[in-house]
Length: 266
Image (cartoon, rainbow, N blue to C red; front, side, top):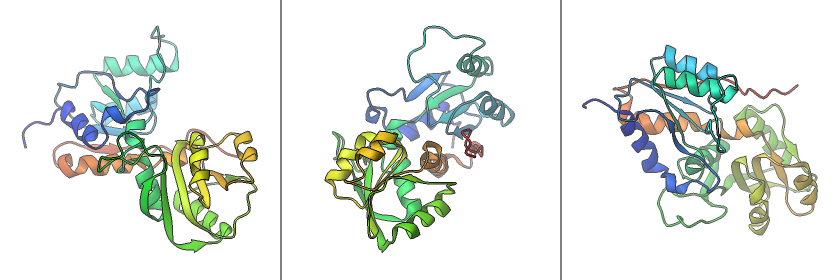
């Protein structure tokens, strides 16, 4: 294979998760940098920080692919002393491209919900809320429905979740269920899909973040479980590595960040 350019890496990601699939509020894609340069290595992370920039520099990676965009809402100035400003300036000074695959890869079958479903052990995966791209082979949508091969008691299933996803705790409402088999999931903040989950007559809906009143207001309608934003999206790094490895593992270093959740629980 000839030289690998940063634009080639980005193109491979967007083949399975086109930018047109991102939500209207999102800022997926290139944040900064020259994508015409030859790629020296790819560093994959969930969130960009100064430490991530340093790790990329030390690993000789000149593109960082994060799940969450470092610039989510518009900014008017790059403040040298702000956290975001320090990150952007350090990336610019070291000629590092910053790229985010966020809701576009959330919505892909090979994305956040696809790998979360695989880890949990769900089969017959399909969209929870169908969108305009539902005719695409790799489209899943912002949430997914699947089934366990065999039903589990609630306590058994929660223990399974904690073990598989390395959870310290699960927050859930008081809806009583005899067993769990039909499951809805949404990595990240999925409260907006609660009405779809109720309409789908699921045994449980699992997502990263749920507001207190959403838990209370739906405790007669559906069992809701909050597992943590980081925890629900943590496996997207290995999925991106897998996508890129098929073409590039013998040509450029592909490095997945091993940092733990920066939000701590006591």
